[in-house]
Image (cartoon, rainbow, N blue to C red; front, side, top):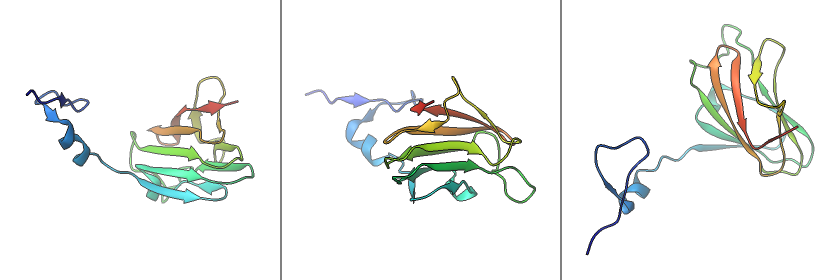
Length: 130
């Protein structure tokens, strides 16, 4: 009988059996929060999950010489598990968040990604609402 094969995205050098694919998956760390929260270095490559019935803010800090993210390309995932709206914002006007359509908020079960473009400049994309 013929075995079914699946290719890993971006890896076209060889076929990988489906059973091998499961063992090669990378798991991300889940950082659970129940109130407004300011991102830190510990959130890089993690999923920040906010679970609150009240409206909350997820704040991106400004580069200040000591608190900063390592380089462009940093990815942080965000999810809203709770019923309260989560608003993604910069700590001040020096933090630029690039979005489409002025959407900066997540409703319940909404997910988004923050991608650092440059110091104090981020892309925000995902299940966003106005």
